[in-house]
Length: 602
Image (tube, rainbow, N blue to C red; front, side, top):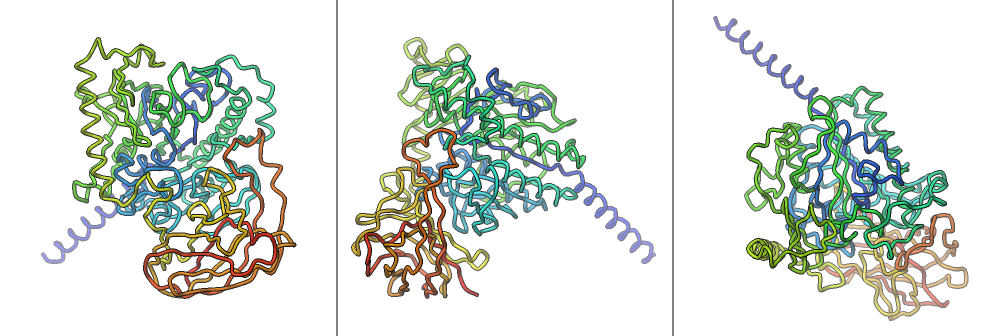
């Protein structure tokens, strides 16, 4: 009797394990494509006859397209909302550089959801929610990371990119190179479920397209024009479309790989963008562009495909947004979000969109989607938009927001204005929990250093503050470097929090002309100091092979940098200024500096 009972228990256990393994095998893969600065009107599926995006369009044709899908006016906030399913202000993301782009470390992410469910997870491209551990993508649920963690990147050809925490010089166009790595990840993990995030760098400036794509567009006559045609620059439109056709080709490469590996029918595919167009170009008459809280600044395409599970060619009319992707994708994969296991302070703002995807949303709720940028607020419902000046518009009739209807519908205007004020108060309460403030040039949250699980910490110029005569190479900090270091009174300062006391190897990426070699520099943190001398010149020219069009004002022209080892420094645990100064300057300047790297020693 005992043996029979034991046999039954073992049989039941083995069957349970077998069913669990079978369920694991059937779990869908997920591929998420995120464009950078592509407007709703930049795709042939949206009606743009000046561009051909058949691969991206195919995701909509084989799946659903969200007709009214809303993101944020700029990059980092949208990425945070996608990752968390929560409004970006809840996670401390208030800007796009100088630390304000970082997602609070107590926020959980969609990548952690899939990682905890046993998925292989990888991100390949632009991250833009924090660079140093534990803000780094590999601390936020991604097993692999390859790309650039900052926002704007100044090199699109043969770019230096981060590979698992170390900078490597790549060969080729940046979108092609990052797609190559995504393909390797899919190939390597084809026999287990994977979550593959491909945040493209384009069509964000600088205006740099591969020659084959530019050749098709450089003499193109435009036939569709921006809502404000007097502000459109034809060459920028042509270059953006060329960059998007390159991106489309890379989407096609990944779709072809899924088909080759017979994974296409069990892979959920999503494509969307992070904000409106980064230049004035055709957007079907909508008001605004990138950085605007109007329709044209925050409406994005969003296509979602899962063959055999999601209807093909379906258009979803109710409003949705980036905050909805985390709850929707986890629900489709039948996994639980990390946030669901936390307290209500981590509740998601997004909704599971499955009822809309499957056509059974008989009691779908009336929604309000809020937008914030730089202290301004806007609100979208299915019918109305209340803009950041308090004007009310009926959106389907008036996408250009030309005719405010406050006087005709005062009760609606008052209701939505009250909703914005309540939401604003809630977000201000959230921000008071974090020590960040837009009134400062730098986010006062320190930059984190020294974690055993990720011992390499890069501190680029964008995360430091120049003092004295030192300045950045451009107004846009993200891909800048420090120049004009000419005096012993000058200093370069990073506000850091050292997590682990110990010895750190110090590496400096610099350039220096031969006539300026010989400066003595000193790195200090509290009472601990490390001195060294610039003994070798390295003075490469500025790149002349990066740009299809002249670089926009405020963006650095880039060059090669050399790495020198300064030595070892003992750093105690704690928070304070990490300061780099010169004690002797025999020439006219010390160096141009792109980054300091600290490597915690075993």
